[in-house]
Length: 561
Image (tube, rainbow, N blue to C red; front, side, top):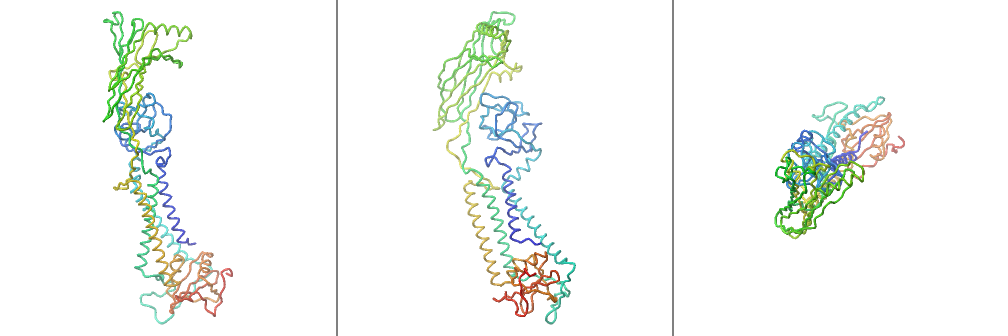
């Protein structure tokens, strides 16, 4: 059974639009979803992740040490996929598995895009190509063309099959020539094909091409509209570097000269043996390096905190807030080793528990100022931890190399500022980059123009067909059902003349067959359907009375069939 052309067109357009929407939904973070799709272009995470891989990251915390995450690196102005190696307060220290260094600065929680979810090896290059709006439109147009060619081929095949197999118990009516001689270019025989009647070929071809171009343009405008309206028209200003903060801890202690301490003077990072050392002084030096025209000032203080592995903590010493103006400030805090040993002994005697302890030096620096006209307040809270036993105090982690010692006694951070004014978001389609608002207006205006053009072409085509009469309308609407004949068929004894061509179409579809079409010498058009030994016919002329049946034949509804 032949599918109507209108329904086929709607199915094709719906398929193309659904494919385009599905392609857009692959990256749902742009639509507010939790997933982002990224293509890897570096080797910093080898051998775990290679260049050219496709990765999917999902937003959501909490993030922990050892997790691979994607984050926006402000100094590099790029998105990195690195592993979390430390958590400093609320910030994350990142490092690539293949790199021999930790990323400069730390990442704020709002800079983290998400954690690694799925990895597809080698698919990143293909994703970059498909993700381009121009390439996506080309793929959608190619898919629409393939679907259209497939439907055309299927229609032709159904038409030929139905013409060759109309029934086992019914012979096709014999064909005889009316008039004198046949045209020279017409081969004799019962089934000689000729083009169906219709409007002139050049004008008809132009109208069809224009209609197809307008519909394709409308679909392209739909894609462009979905892309542009799914992107924000404005975005928050990009974070800009504001200032770089760094802090260095050092300590000095004194002891009686001995084989362990020949000079009696101990400096960092040497271990402190509590039975030999009388006291220690911790010094924290803070430095801020503003970027651009930035004026800073603030206050700083330092705490010494004792921790037990059971979660118990106690603040041993606290310096008062020390205000500063400028870029540097130093804090000093002495610690009595005798008092520390006495406190540890008291705690152990009271708790009867051989707990292990650690000592944390926790500076707190509040920096405030203004960058341009925007005021800011930043908090710098590094942590320096020492392992503490009854006999000694050493740097946590027992760093063995000079670089490891420097990293354990130094902390730095890059602060950024986000402008309060939003920026106009751009969208690149191929080589053309325009603001998102412009693409939205273009999609609406061009889409309405394409639809108006398609409507005007369809109306023009319909009016031309109306002027040409009912045969032209029938040929345009039911082209897939018609089998044009060059010779007039000889009708059998049993025949029924239907009142309208729609009735004849219902008979043909009920019996899953085609409609034979012949143009008589007087210009009248004859349409016949042979089903169950009965010939159903309909006659149409180009005159106003073309729908009237001859007076000497019997007329009936299709229900009688």
